[in-house]
Amino acid sequence: MSSGAGRARIQSLRMRTDTGESYQERINRVLVHIQQRLEEPLPLEELAGVAAFSPYHFHRIFRGMVGESVKEHVRRLRLERAAGRLRDSADPITDIAFDAGYQTHESFTRAFRAMFGDAPSGFRENRREIRALDVAPPERREPLAVRTERLGLTRLAFFRHVGPYDEVGQAWQKLYAWAGRNGLLGPAAEILGVVHDDPEITPPDRLRYDAAIVVNERVKPTGEAGIEELPAGEYAVAVHRGPYTMLGGTYARLCGEWLPASGREARSSPAFEIYRNMPYNTPPDELVTEIYIPLMD
Image (cartoon, rainbow, N blue to C red; front, side):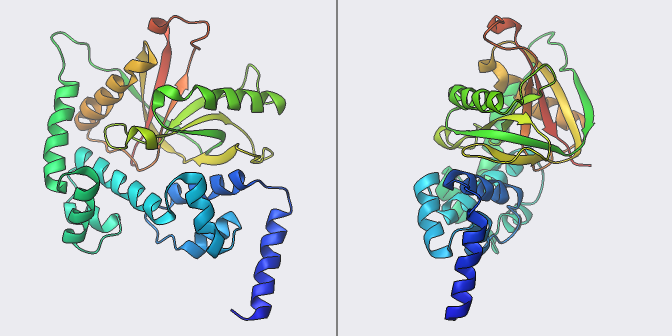
């Protein structure tokens, strides 16, 4: 790079960061960029530009704040998405391998086995057997009631939790404190949780969950508060009644019973949950949670 180009690059970075953006805001922006574009090449220079860091320093900053390198993060998310497709679809393994960024079946198999301890074909067979056991209906169990709903593009402000799903309380505390300071709470506030990962596939310490509130374009990311969008489209909606610790069973029935019977397929974007009452004033057995699974058109 010439000295003139270098000075221009530095000036560009300064202009983008003079607004007072924190490191966390910039890392949030690149995390959202990655999760929305897993099928794209995602070169380091592009991601550094999204975060407004120099490519040289960006890699070190990302590893220090996220806990894994850019390459490890992207590779893990792509392999986890591939594992979900292996379990939940009949797509050919070669197609899944190619979509995960692998040019050969052999290279995909090596990487997949290293992460999950099984070849893709074995994982598909074994996980489907586990899922079938999870959702086997007991005698006289009522069919799961599911409706479909078409939603527009939804803009969210969020605080991200990375770790076991039963430890998301701190993210919610941060969201409510931030939303309260910014005048976003009230009777019309729409609060939801975005569930990025499947605990059957992703290690507990890497599960991603966003405590989120619907916002308009005037709300900007600040500090730990990031901005993301839920894509427009059709969703399957099931109502879970009872403790949050039992949500996994309703997810299993929705994905393992309703989806196959309906002939529909899940779209590659996050599920989310809308909480119709709150645990601070509702007994666990009376909690009502709506689960939204995105569907392919």
